[in-house]
Length: 117
Image (cartoon, rainbow, N blue to C red; front, side, top):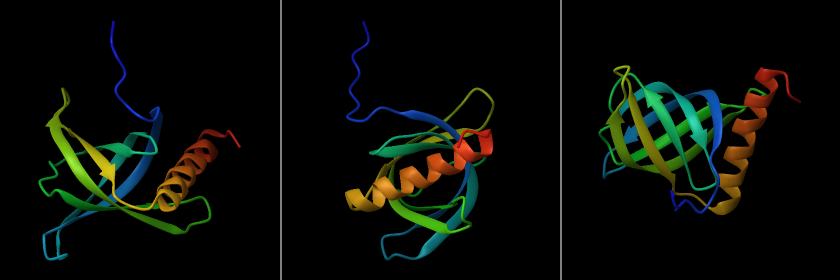
């Protein structure tokens, strides 16, 4: 029997997402694009072509009204998958209100792309 340790349920998604890696001084060190695989109120898993080596990260996505939404996070792990891409788990580091807004906007956009309004 598998015991679920997550506080929040994960929701599968397939949104494009941009990220910026940030060093200890708050300077941008690397940026790229990936795909959100799943998301919950506590964090997100993204798939990228390159590994994310920075712990601090800024995620950005465009919602259905073409508004840019940003959220800060902390990379908890980054591991290669069977297809040569990388899966990174990111814990959100924002106020609960900002996290809920980011998750809601991402899921609304995904639902609209699927034709589920």
